[in-house]
Amino acid sequence: MTADGEIDATNGKALGRFVERHTGISTQLILDLSNVEFFGSQGFRALYYVDVHCARSDVDWALVGSPAVRRLLEILDPNVEFPLVEDLAAAQSRLNCLARCHRLVMGRG
Image (cartoon, rainbow, N blue to C red; front, side):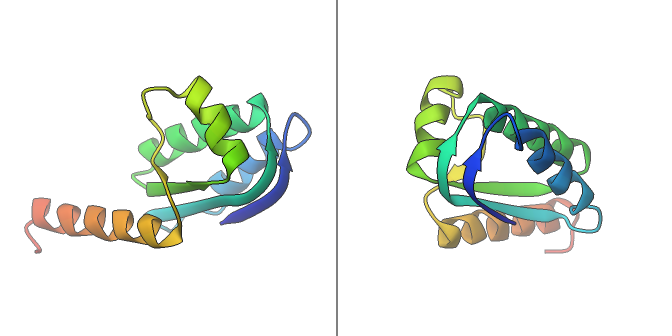
């Protein structure tokens, strides 16, 4: 999923709900925010909502963040709890690795 422009109080909640509605049949998600120009605190809340939803739904995810997203996460997520990666290739690599791990754990590897 891709979002661009601004994520703020007017649309942060909608982003979280959109992700929730569209991850029903998937076990993986790449949230590409690499073109987000402004990322406010409601954007952070949306990411927290996405993180909780994905954990509850067994959806592995990766986040590609723009400089604006990264800047806010440096402040509000200093322990790097969100699965932030550099680019789409790194996101895909992360999810491929997680899928392999899941197969090994399930004995299908």
